Image 1 (cartoon, rainbow, N blue to C red):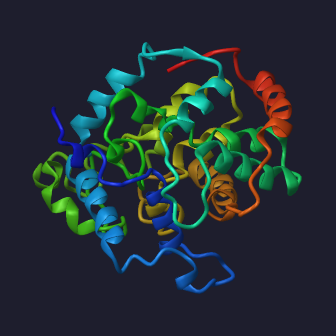
Image 2: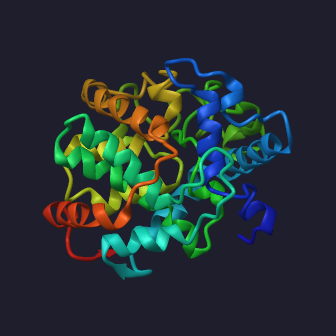
Length: 287
């Protein structure tokens, strides 16, 4: 399937999606909206266009195709820190809130977790959680890398952001996929549910043999806002999922609210994170 440049990159920066999250999920302290991006301008239209594409093309069959293509891990072999530097080439300085690159965002997230005294695997999860965005460097359109995630193969919840765009998704008219349970059974557990394709699912498969289960839930479902903020898919979850989602809920404030104008000193932090990576992950990972 060929995509136009607009379809590949409806956002001028991957950070625009994260900025939009801050608008939709403001800090508990209720910071004034004007302190975040004002989306009453074309930038908002850009985010809407991103979700129009995402909701149109993220079908059950599309996800199966992407899993078959990328879960072979035959694109590149690289050290984890090298993958972070690789990821950094993706973003520009168009973030209107704080001029942070991806590595700095990940370090800020991880350092906030470390400052609160959480286990080292939790700190490492904060550092790694967006590494799956390297998918963009293999020619993937942004709508297939970032964005809120949701189950495919069953009816789309009206509590997913911009649900009106699902009317263009072929699955919404397919009787196999447009009912409440679709291809699934009630309370079958998320391990049996196929999620929309993106950096969360990709990184989960990279790390699933190396990190504790709570970390894997954080990685796999940190963009699943329709559930951990809206509880829209309780009917697919089992008791184990509900227990693990306590960790997802614990993680997300660090991801959303750890941005700070004080930039991390990468050279000072690098030895700590390289040691932490070596404790849990192999010397190189396959992408």
